[in-house]
Image 1: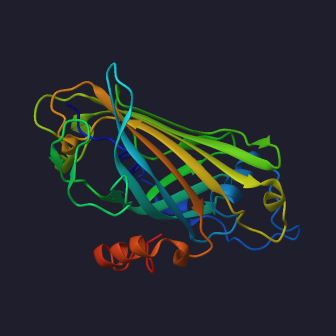
Image 2: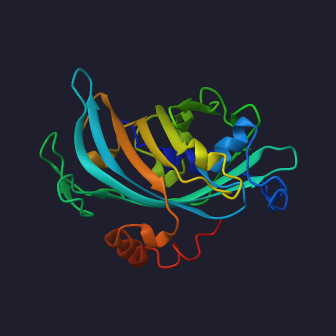
Amino acid sequence: MSTQLTRRDTLKLMAATSTAATAGVQAGTPASGFVPTKPMDVYAKIRCSLRDELVPFWYRGQAMVALQDDVPRPILGVEGFSYTRFTRQEDGSWMTRLVEVGYFTDLVSGAIVDEATNRVNGKRIKPKHFSSPVQAFGVNADGSVTSDHKLTPPSEFAGRVWAPYRQGTEVWIDEDMLAKLTSDALPPSMREAGPPRILTLGSMTSYRSHSADVQNPRLASAPCTFHLQELSSLPSWFELGDVVGKQLWRLSGRKLASPDEMPATLRARIDTDHPEFVKKPGI
């Protein structure tokens, strides 16, 4: 069975960015206000902000096991909090940075669990909660996503932000992060025993905002919600043995006006495990 490869692992491996690339240009208030006219500026206003500022997000959903020839079966809940910062570069592209902390939860109560029962086979498992270093990527005017980290075939990475589109009174925009890595490209602490093998990830997210908010010249950041689906290799801590299948995540969340809007139970756990994170996230 393959080592887990999640969006967090992939972005951690791929997001090597130079200091010069993240310096950007000073973000003031344009004379015309914050009205984006280019597709990736629309993305920046919805996904984060046209100002160079911290933007908090909260999300919740489920982690599922999809074994070969079987339907996906929920195994745990997921809940997390993140900060995003977008910095406009001199060529008009965007440098995006993100940090996050997340936890696995009980599917029924929503409480964070440090031990649980695998609903597929009944085995006891110890969920591997996650926190990330800074995940940094460049988003170009054509929607392509770039990284300074170079991969050697057969490993590959493909990131894309698709052009925004209208759905009734809303603007939607889709973001893909797709990767294939050999297990020996992982840091030693993440490798499994045995010969190298291919690990895969597909992380697909849709963001949505009201058109009126996107076009509001007084708003640098448009309120938004999002939905993410992620398909990746099964983690060893699922205790599934030598099976063929994938891990499927389904998450929904929203941009917060303040970190104080996150659920109190999540905030308490983050403050216990990562005391400086909410006030000093490091981006």
